[in-house]
Image 1: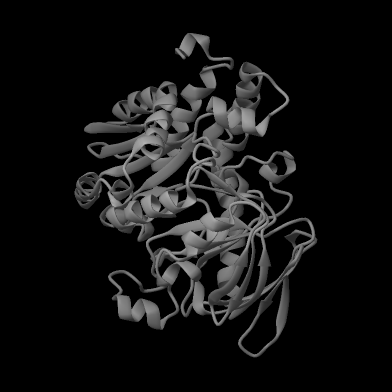
Image 2 (image 1 turned 60 degrees about the vertical axis):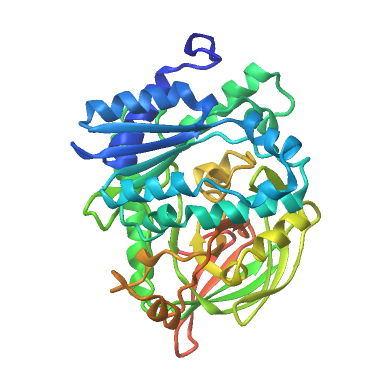
Length: 415
């Protein structure tokens, strides 16, 4: 579909492109940019490239995927091919990041693209891709470079979110929701993001001052105690990458998050929203954690995919992130289920299986794998967020001496 046939005001794409480059990445003159997305996102990708060059980018390299080509692999690919991945591509991306290239992904994926495919093949391909992706993802998870994610209102995604509307109306409705969540539907998006980052910083600083030893989550089928890693730091909103550039890794974002202790998580957790993963929808996840590891897992839909996910490697069944998001967040209050982790995770408190963020540990620059493990940081090929928060969520911060401090009540900040 050409720009002129899009069923929404494309002026908001121009605003989103400017926010992606200026606020999301804070792209610096002379930086290269690795820009990824699906072919459907070209109207936004082209605008982002133009905004990047206006900001002084030395080179923008777009890498595009296509849903039909991806499906063709599962429909026609020989069985032995599902353990293959484009390692050469990710090695090149890793080299680009070593040379201080920035990274931006434009999300528009159809959450159901692979829901009718063999979950065993989906799991194998995902694991192979995760292994191959390691040279690139390590630069992102360690916050070595400035990176960000924004979204484009894809038509298949839109019709899942708005099933009662025709294709054009659904895409227009999703576009309106994404532009609002990304704060580009206001007169001054840059100022709006500055105010929002300041509010997140206030919450982040309070949590860092508390130095909690653990968090206790209760509500909606969840009764979970999450120990926090030694020397953990809370982050949220704008932050400085190790290359010295302050950026907003996620557009939108409503969370403050930190690194849990990989072996000090105990209790039950029930998903409050579906998880869209690798083109499959996983619903009603329930797990039991014992000494940090998932020992029992179930789901009413996509259970096989979820179980394959937590079998990816040893760290996949442990937590790498815990994040706090109030039920009053604008994305939650929209009442929409986006079937997209970038949005749904910003509507509810969530946890992430897999790799931890080293940025959420003090004095962790250049930390060895042994020291990371000793402090409770988790290591894995995956990092997958899923939501456990709701309007019923209660969270207490627990100090080393056992004292409890209310953090959340009825789904929102206690104070």
